[in-house]
Image (cartoon, rainbow, N blue to C red):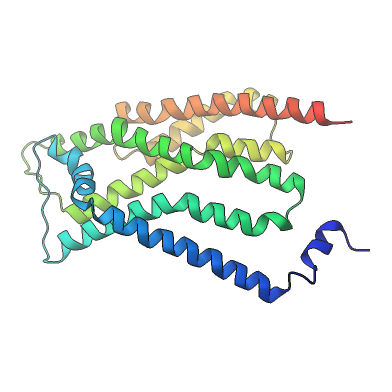
Length: 249
């Protein structure tokens, strides 16, 4: 006998072709939103690039370029990445609406925290880098050897800034990863609390690898939110364990 999920997937009212048409409709809708977001972002490309260049400009450093197309392509890329960032929630929502009917209730409960909290946490990590860590890192690099004149290329600087924003955004997803591992039974609050010392050592290693500069100040700036996120993860882990215990028969 088919399970309810199998019956739903094998429903003759929703054949494979209908699934493909529905998927195509949602992809086209997402692409349409991306185009609109790109047009809106490009209308503010000068303001976006001013924000990109601000860590250099605040130090009196004017970025340069060495090929004719670099300014135009950098402005275009900046607007496109902003559009991707703004479109991401719509894309995730469309994907969720497409796959949701095929998921069990328990599987849905595992997914929804990522849908709700992953985007704000990513924004938090990116903002922490841009407003706290990155200005210190840029100043360190610029003033490292005062006998040299800094002439940073705008395309290289933009790529470096973008990669660091992405890394810090992902690092701030730690509580959600902990939540998922706890929900599927691979992690417990007791284990996390017991191994807090080892975790801090790993966090220090990660901070040394991920921070754009190897000095102690930037490592501490990176370590502090990671340690806080680890403690928050323990609290989340305990909360989920309590909920699972209350739900158990």
